[in-house]
Amino acid sequence: MCYSILKLVAGAHDFKGCAQRVKVLLGFIKQLAPYAAIELILPGGTLLALLLWFYHRRKAAARSEAASGLLTAGLFRTLHLSRS
Image (cartoon, rainbow, N blue to C red):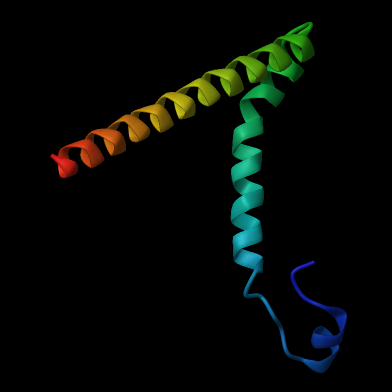
């Protein structure tokens, strides 16, 4: 819960972290919505949704590895040029 019972009883509400938690939850729901729709609508949708989810995660991991490789190559080039 976003607030404690004691603070609620005392009349002081602590909603500082609540907005961040709601944003994270909504982001998670937005990510899962297409897969849930596939699962509910199509026959055999559970397998299809899982395969699609694994495919997208693998594709995203490959993109992040490529981006980190490009960053490393750019950093190496910068360091090499600064030494010259």
